[in-house]
Length: 124
Image 1 (cartoon, rainbow, N blue to C red):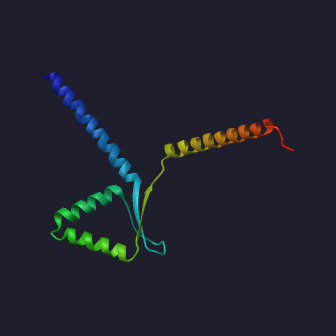
Image 2: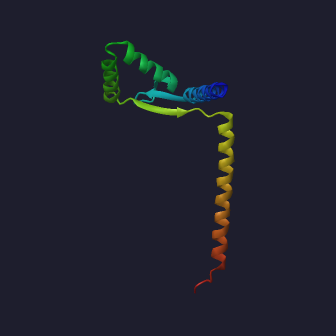
Image 3: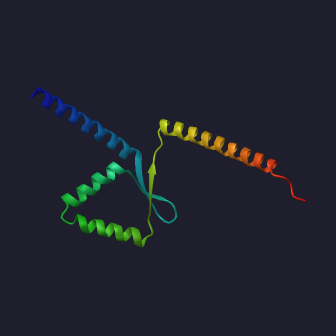
């Protein structure tokens, strides 16, 4: 019985940890609504958008109608939605490393192509 409790406790800790990671990832991603001129109309995190959507659809009897009207308005006014992921320090470090590796790879490919060109006999 004790082993089952320990397994259940470990499973609950794992679920809670994954939930925290998911929430953190949702807070780093944002939805930005812009009008055709590029002005920001709305800027919310994914987590906030999910909570607002659930509240509107579940608590308001006319929630679905409000969502349909909002979608129609967005389409008719050509509202653009941008889904943006905010970079963390770790992401930025990885991006710099990837860029350096890519530059090194391109340089090596250029050197190899240059060597191949030098090896080929010249035609007269």
